Image (cartoon, rainbow, N blue to C red; front, side, top):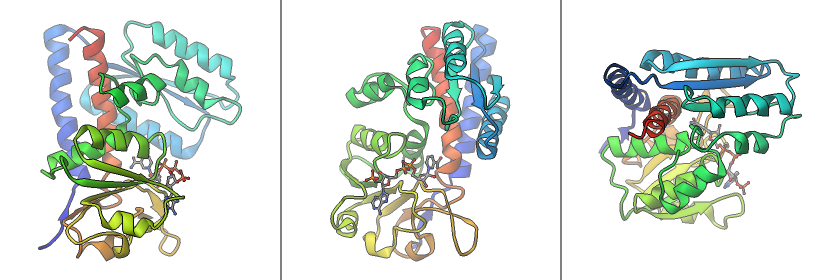
Length: 286
Ligand code: NDP
């Protein structure tokens, strides 16, 4: 049977359209305007593109975005002061500092400074802790997007063997907690895992978040498995974007797979927008 290609563009558009309606209702019926403050320090071109895309998504959905584009020379103290001001503003629901920040600023201090009530990226230790023990809190956007891709593609998670390749704080670890919450049997693997191929071959669902172009080949995947490819890499030969999974080599084996681009990527911003909406609900006791 032909593999189902999970269309992240379509699913993220559906989520954004649903949010647009919810944000409109919140504004019309309760007079609440969802607001996200976006902070960018420096002029890294990739970060500028990410920030622009986030602001565009806000505009589309009807979320007010406040933009703080600060020079590279901004000190840690100045940035922390701005975060503190935004933490205390009643009209700001979410605060996002685009990572990476310049080297002279400690990113951990920045993450810790954002109020857990406004931590729409879900990076604060309290957000991660809440996820760990199943309490309400913000979930890191990319793993949250993966869950939506699976659910909206009617892929059963409960009781399935899930192998996650990668254990980073922003993808692999929160991904494992979310899959556990959905009742999967979860194995988290990394660069020191022994016989990774055999471990991955056990999986009904393989989630690759490695940062190694096309590493997950047919040797790692059992027939009929689902492959979710979080990786965004540049193929050294073609110069084109590619994932951590060898899409062409897997397409005849898997039951479902996400393409790169157009799979997990578009979901991240949609889930960020969802976190902003959730923040506004929380701040208004809804
Ligand atoms: P990190 O570099 O932080 O983590 C990579 C993980 O992969 C580490 O845990 C590392 O293990 C593991 N790893 C590296 N090499 C191997 C190997 N040979 N075998 C097994 N495991 C290995 O990356 P991120 O989690 O931040 O990102 C992963 C990928 O996802 C990247 O391509 C990134 O661009 C992409 N990404 C995509 C997003 C999206 O919106 N779609 C969002 C965020 C990331 P160890 O811990 O032992 O070093």
